[in-house]
Length: 186
Image (cartoon, rainbow, N blue to C red):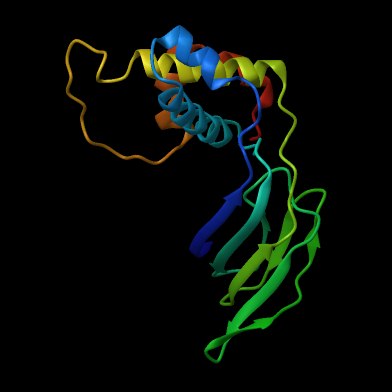
């Protein structure tokens, strides 16, 4: 069981297509607004599919488990190599753990606070035409269905976490969910 888990990621630029200018023209909004929503859509698609389409330039995970376990690195595609540190006597010290890059699997020992990271850039997953169209549809749908454009301009506050369950309504409404069915990592 995981007792503690926190992450920190640095990403490269969003994939080149779709273009914010095309979306802005169709949505009747500014290119800056479309670009912001496009970036948000890429993050949503990554959360929905379990794949990272932007390059991951750096990443760090701090994790502690209560039983021996084989744990999967949370970002796919997996980095080729990772650095391992364990917290001992008030500081982080180098630590050796088994890591299988092709599967992203890491063997963790219980009651050790690990800091696991990578400093080399991990290329993003291949953007298929279906993913590109899903991002386009999702961005356009959100711009057209934004609270500012709806007749009733109220929005309930709620959980802002990005999970498949919370994203389903917008993915269903935009048609992006059907296009991403073949891209899902379980």
